[in-house]
Length: 107
Image (tube, rainbow, N blue to C red; front, side, top):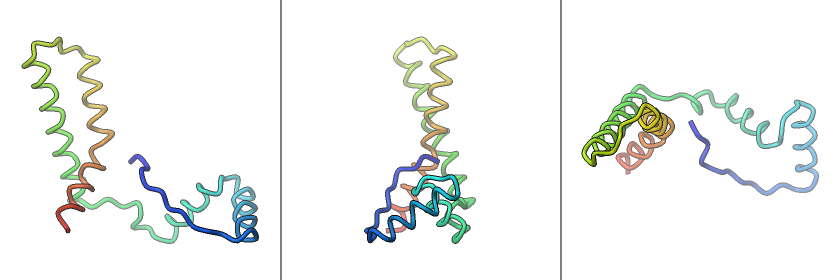
């Protein structure tokens, strides 16, 4: 899934120096080290539920069908490259779409 969210915090100069030192000692950037720390301390941070997967796949299929039917309906050529581009776009965005729908549903 594409990272689209940012988390920011204020650090003292000493904390900032310590963060940079520990990240460098682990061969990582400070942001990569913090991300790893969050994921390791909360395994659920990277887990996707069955409901999320199912909705993501359904939304991807919907996007593919709409885009391909639109192409056919406008008498545009349906090339192998065009189909691959539509599928890749749907695959890239499907989980974000599903999470957005589920978040909206919960409110």
